[in-house]
Image 1: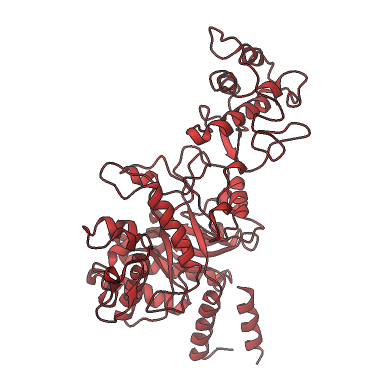
Image 2: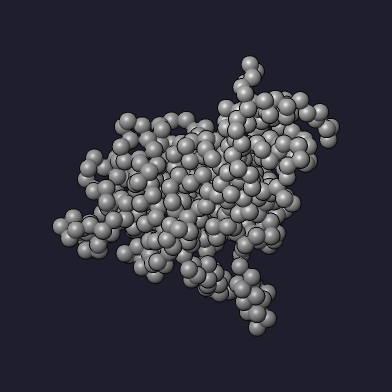
Amino acid sequence: MLLPRWFAEAFLLLLSFLAFSNAAYIGVNIGTDLTNMPSPSDIVTLLKSQQITHVRLYDANSHMLKAFANTSIEVMVGVTNNEILRIGRFPSAAAAWVNKNVAAYIPSTNITAIAVGSEVLTTIPHVAPILASALNNIHKALVASNLNFKVKVSSPMSMDIMPKPFPPSTSTFSPSWNTTVYQLLQFLKNTGSFFMLNAYPYYGYTTANGIFPLDYALFKQLSPVKQIVDPNTLLHYNSMFDAMVDAAYYSMEALNFSKIPVVVTETGWPSSGGGDEAAATVANAETFNTNLIKRVLNNSGPPSQPDIPINTYIYELYNEDKRSGPVSERNWGILFPNGTSVYPLSLSGGSNSAALNDSSMFCVAKADADDDKLIDGLNWACGQGRANCAAIQPGQPCYLPNDVKSHASFAFNDYYQKMKSAGGTCDFDGTAITTTRDPSYRTCAYTGSLNANSTGGNFPPNALGPVSPLGGNANALIISSYHIPLLAPLALTLLQLLLQH
């Protein structure tokens, strides 16, 4: 039978309420523009160890989506900006995209949202007229797959579409985007979805020419004389983050839309910058993200919407060392590409003692690494790198299996564990990769393992052998002569019950 319109609207409101009535969460963005990208399985292991429940991918990478299978982690996938035109023009393209990148992985992989593009209006404005069509086509494809109640669709927007975000109460969307934004908001209301906002207090502070104090951007308490107050509503804003989110709510209200939740899909602070980026420091990044996590997890909304929590994704998991542009562009991560923490941070909101654990990362040889390169790296690690290679000598616990990949993994890891705090990396000419899986086996304990001491396995430091003309030490040269072997269920239940009456 056909449901009355009022019932459909009420049901969508119920879905929206259910989606946002739970405790607020902190998620992370996972960029991939880095030299030594950990494997998807290792990333998932790291996320699970830190109790991270939500992640955002910028595309729909099949390897990542497979790695998230059978975990409780909620995944937001992305339609890239390059895909929007085709998906907006052709419903069949949207259906194919959903079938390939969403339906094929559900229910094993817990995909709960699709971000259609990223800051489309300000980065690729020529695509703006077709954005609403792309959203609708993706949603219709989800309906056809019976996934529309599980997977929400939206499109991340930049703060730049609100030219004057302060005071929040007078904020409006740029008139040049009113038509597109109105279509977006109507879509979000009709489908019970949320408004995705990329909000960066770092840029709000650095472009304000000293109007706002740094403490305001970093969530630090301001003295009474410095407190930021909206002169129209007299609401006090303890952080620029809250003011940015409220600016979005007031901008939506100016177009007669209310109660569409704001989810912050990107925010963060860079830990390093160039000479003209003085605010990009490790101390500021640690302060911002630590205070951000506490702010979000207190489960309240901004001053104008105190009952709507601000679910937020930190930008980002790793420093993306291959990105171009200012120095800060490569330093937004909470981890270095080698897997070590940029600064102590607890993503659960507790003390920093529960921060990302560097010792859980190991460095091992890649499975497809070239043997000659592995031998070179092995010689270097046991020689100039001063790794303790005693355990991989004949008769010792890590000698077997007697192959270059196994021995290189042990040597690479010993070097990495000792030198990572001084900037040592897990690269070795592209032959090594970090992993959260402890590679120890039987009596062979890798450095960094709970079963090993700090000297490398269970062995005392060995004296370096004589340096040969070829580099490395005598033991390393013996090793290099190896013969290498060729080898939302509740909502659906409610709907079913209602349809029976």
